[in-house]
Length: 116
Image 1: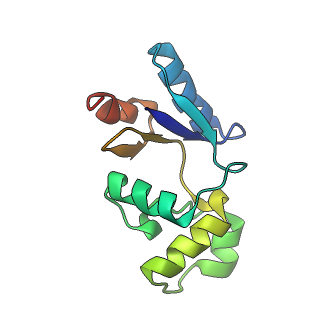
Image 2: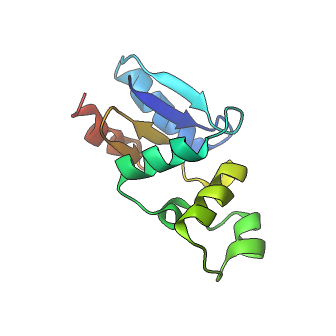
Image 3: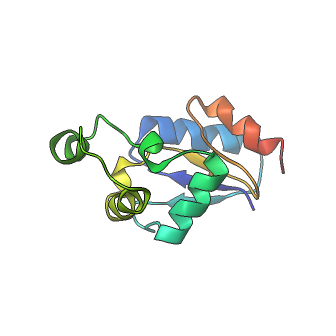
């Protein structure tokens, strides 16, 4: 099942959602700020993204700039940080069965759509 991890307050996330709606596909919308990621979910998504946790961080977020910037964390520490602070995660993330992408621009979602 296709999923989009979405923040309705984010313009880029809304654009990604609209892109999928325009394609007339069935997909699940996950408001990941309300339905928080588990650590296992984050690990699975990172594997599908083929990225490290620090590669999906929104570095412009105040919490990152004040508390995290310039510090070194292990993989597990990053997972913990992201699970507790999902606002730090880039969005939207479009996830398929075997692949996921950060859909910025929204057309990046096509990389996942090709695999379903």
